[in-house]
Amino acid sequence: MNSKKILGSILLSLSACIWGGMFVVVKDVVSVVHPLQLVWLRYLVAIIFLILFSILKRAKISITS
Image (cartoon, rainbow, N blue to C red; front, side, top):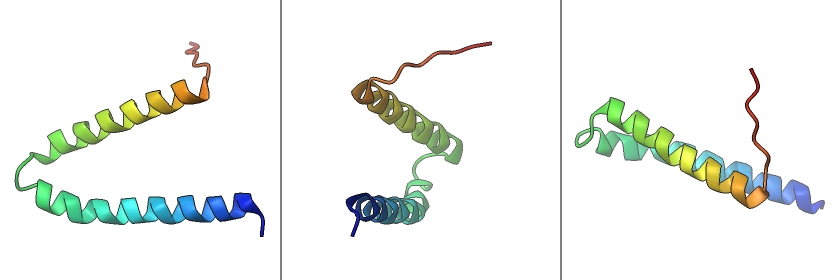
């Protein structure tokens, strides 16, 4: 089997597990953290990971108007 198909299947399964697990985590965390704060915390974590990923991939980021 093609190694890219296997890697794609593994990554897809991993993302589905993380996405499904978030519902369980949010259910417990909402009693401690306000839902709006939780949304911004998730955005902050996502931005950090995306910046690190783009640095590792050496992606050129440009903003055009």
